[in-house]
Amino acid sequence: MNIPFLKNICLFKKKNAVPVDKSTYLLTPDAPFAIAEAYRMLRTNIMYSAGQEGTPIYAITSAMPHEGKSINCSNIAISFAHAGKRVLLIDGDMRNPTVAPLFKESSKNGLSEYLASVVPEPNFIPSKYENLTLMVAGHKPPNPAELLGNKRIAELFEIAREKFDYIFIDLPPVNMISDATILAKDISGYLFVVDSGHTHSGAVKRALDSIRMVGGSVIGFALNRVNPKKSDGALYGYKSYGYSRRYYKNYYNRYNTKNSDVETEEQETDAE
Amino acid sequence: MEANSLSFKDLFSIIRRFWILLLIVTVVGGAFGAIYASATLDPMYSASVMLEVHNYTNGDDAFINTNSEFELAEKLKAGHILTVTESYNYLKEVLVALTHWEISEAEYLALEKEHSENISFVKDYPYTERKLIGYEDTGNVSSTDGLPILKPLYENVEKTRPAYFLDVLSEFGYRDQNGVITLTPSAIRSMISISENEDAVNFFKITVSSTNKQFALYLTQALEKVLIEKFVNYGSVITNSDPRANDGVSYPLKKYTAIAAVASFVLCYGVLLLIKLFNTRVTNEEELKRIANIPLLASIPDFNFGKQK
Image 1 (cartoon, rainbow over the protein chains, first blue to last red):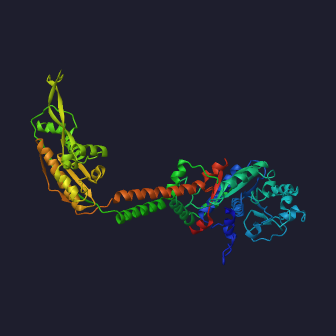
Image 2 (image 1 turned 45 degrees about the vertical axis):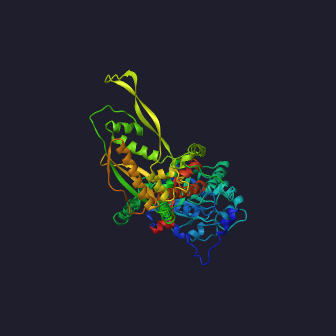
Image 3 (image 1 turned 90 degrees about the vertical axis):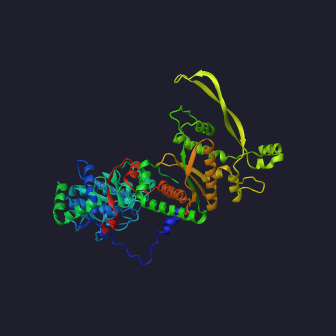
C-alpha cells in the first residue's frame, strides 16, 4: 500500500480555490484574544529560557513543511517587538522564502546576497511593526546549505547582536533538507513547531534526533493550529488554569470595553 | 505500523471527547435492537395466578429446618407452621418435580419392557417421590428440650404426573401420538416463574409466558390445580384468584435492546480506540511529552477557529 501517493493526491489544488493571503495571519492589535494570549505566553516562555548574556538567536523550524513555521516565527518576532524588544527576523529558508511576501517587502538584497558576498553589508529592512526589523531571504541561490555554512553567517550574527535584543531565524523543515541543522552551533536554540493533528510523532522524533546529532538544543515545542474543540487538553494554559470559554468571553469583552489600556500595560511590564 | 501506547487517561479521553457520538451510536444501536426484536421475534403472552397459602398452626412447634418438598408436606400435615420462605421453596419444588421428565433412552426402554402391559404408565412419565412412613428412635436425647431425637423414615413412591397437566401439553402439540413430551424440561421451566409478593407475605404469583396465549392460560390453570392438590393433600389451604391471561403483548425488548445498545457502544468505542491507537499524529502536550522531554512553550490556536470566535 502506497499511502504517501494517496496523500499526494490531496495536494492538488481544487479548481477555483482562492489563494489564502497569509499576511492576514500576522499578529495585529485586533487579533483574537486567544491567539494574542498564546503568543504572549510563548514570548514569556522564550524569554525565561534565554540565557543572561548576549542576544539570543532562536531558529524556528519543524519536522515537515506546512506546519506553520514562518507564520509562527513572524508572530513571535512581532510579539517580542510589541514588548518593546528590538527584534531581527531573518528568513533563513532561501529555498522557499516567506518573510518577504508575508510582510509585503521586496525580496532583493537579502540573506543569500549577503552570504554570497554580493552585498557588503546586511540589508536590515524596518518593518511596519515598531521595533521589528526584517532580513529577507533574497534571491533563491543554487546552494543554500553551503551559503548557510559560510563564515559570513557568523559575521552576520555578530553585527545583528550589536543592534538587536532578539534574533529569530525562519529555517526550513529539518526532515526535508539539512539547512536547519547547519546553524546548530551558531544559535541559542531551536523552537520546534508541531502542527497539531497533522505531524506524526515519528517525524518529530527523527527531526529531534537530527538536531541532537549536530549538537543543537531545542528550547521547546510550539503546538500549532490547536483546535480547542478537538484537542483533548484544549489550549495549553487556558483550560488547565480555569480559563473556560465563558470566562474567556467575559474577560475579553471587559478587556475591550472597559480597560483598553491593559494590553499596553502588560506589554510594558513584559518589556521591563 | 507504529502504534501508540495508551494510558487510562487516554481511554477516558475517548469517552470524554466522543461522548456525543458514543451516545448516538448506543441509542441508535439500542433502537435497532428493539426494532429487530419486535419485527422478528414472536410476541410473548403471559398468564398468571395469585396463590394465597394458609397453614394450620398449633403454636410454636419445634421447627425442622428442611427444604424437601415431602418433609415440608409432612410438617404441614403435622400442623407445623411454614415460613414464607419454606412455602416459596415448596411451591418451587413442586414445579420442578412437575417439570422433571428427563429420562434417558435406555431408561425409557427398560421401563417400556418392564411395563409392557401398561404402556400408558410409561407415557405418563412416572417419577419417584419420597414419602414419610414413620420415625425411628435414634436413642439420643435433645440437649435443648430433653426430648428423644427421631429419625424420619421414608419410602419411595412412584407416581404419575397429573393427567390434566399432560392433557394441556397434548392439546397444544407438546406431546406426540405416542404420548412422548416434545417440550424439554428446560424449555417449560423457562416459561414458568414464581415470585413472592412483597406486600402480602403469603401470596405467591405463578406466571407462565408463552408465544401461545391459550397455552399460557391453560398451563397456568393446570399448575394452579396441581399446587392446590399438593397443599390440600397435606392439610393446607390455598385460596387463589382465577388464573387470567394478560391482554398485553410483550416482546423481549429490554433484553435485545440492552444487548444491541451495549454491543453498539463497545463496537463504536473499539473503533475509536483502534483509530486512537494507530493514529500517531501529535495532538496534545502529553503526546509531545512521550516523544521527548522538551517543554511545550505554547499552544497556538487555529487561526480560523480564533477568527470565528
